[in-house]
Image: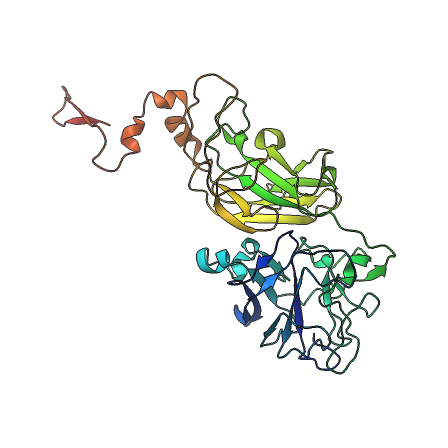
Length: 426
């Protein structure tokens, strides 16, 4: 919303939540506005430079932060900008995307319709009529910045308007104290939202005395179409599908406050939230937990679905990913790298292990003869599954014929004694 010195003196801050430096070369920061009946790109900032990891918890330490200032380096006059950009954000609200080189150069999905597939986004929900909602926080009258409390959650209630209370850092071009914390830990870490029944642009907030790290549990990998006995129960079936979560924060997380679910409608066409509540298990920072379909009862659709990580207390979505049709078995969808990387739809399944794009199948430890794998997706009609995959069907169908290209299968011609037409058995 600018500063008291100039409403055009906007600034944007990025934060490195990992333990390693991140090169921003090839990354993009884009914003989209809605006008008439379509989205239009407003900002398209080509990022450059490196964000170092956070080196200490000292309040004045600026490591881990990356500051972009609009126009020149005088927007925050006493703090050096890491990059200068041109253009302005609409005060009425936009969708902002942070996209990695993978999103830009390979997946080509740095746009509004695929916001869940980029590294991060802000203000992503729309009104019932399809318009962009106002910014969930920030003030154009007091020039209070919009700050994020939780580094992972994209919920609107996760954003707060800086009131000018401490901590605050930086001076504007006229020497006024900025109502924000450029290149410093957010003031929003110290506030708690009052529950709201409906959406309002600026959340009500209450100051609390302590600033503690928040738990950060996110989805890390999931497999929607299995071709291997990943859960080692002696069978290759839909119950080998799995969902993996990871503690990407700095404090322990107890899983009992969360649940997993997928997109499902009831008989009336309404969303049905009947997910799997995670067990009382504590994950230390960086630790993972894997939950198979045999345990959760969540069977992910091969024709496309959405995976949700939710709070059990109010069913609010903490993390989610919507995936398209799954065309191959044993191709998982994962964050690469773990915990904070971009979502990739071409990973090798690595339940409980570091995410990878390649690997070797892990043989089952359950013993016994090899198990036949049905390669049909779970979205085909039951009649096809019976004929192609079940025992009775295997005696009727010649898989090598039906799975071959035209003209490549074996054909057996049989005479028909009671008629003049030849009969072909395929």
